[in-house]
Length: 212
Image 1 (cartoon, rainbow, N blue to C red):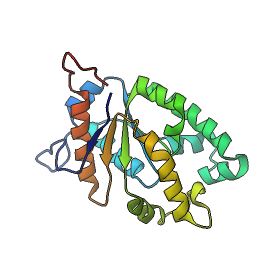
Image 2 (image 1 turned 45 degrees about the vertical axis):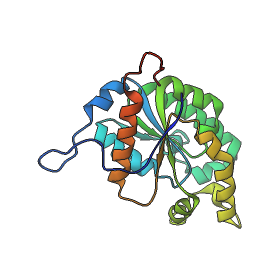
Image 3 (image 1 turned 180 degrees about the horizontal axis):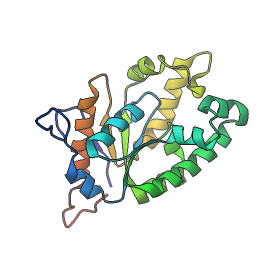
């Protein structure tokens, strides 16, 4: 099963006469009970794209980090890191994602490190379609500098830390079913791009091909 890379284009769900986006019933039907799982680095746009994608497909949207904070009694992600450490957070993250995957169909945005867990990747493969939102380092830097709640970037040189994370994680993110390039452009372009890629990935396979 190879990954398909899709660049920004004006394709996807149509619009009603009043200007509102029509849910893409074809993608939603082909999805069945599976979840659309967004993976990628912090700043790639998983939450913002995920919310709009869920609206376009008339599906629920869930953010794994938000659910982790709720499961931790309202502690924020930085607080969990500070009090319990990264290893504890990763264990909790894997458990929460596994639980959320039981509730498809939905659009699920995961944290930047969730996809690195082999068991999580297996569970996603069984219950969903994974999409890597791939962004250049410069784009990520521009976005993450706007927020201070990134515990992994709490270092003397956040840029060097981010580049090291990109080098380590991108080969693993590339294992996702679909790759969509995320860059500075209107969100609707990215949504159209994701939907177009989903249509191709979910289309009936030829006799000599295996579907996702």
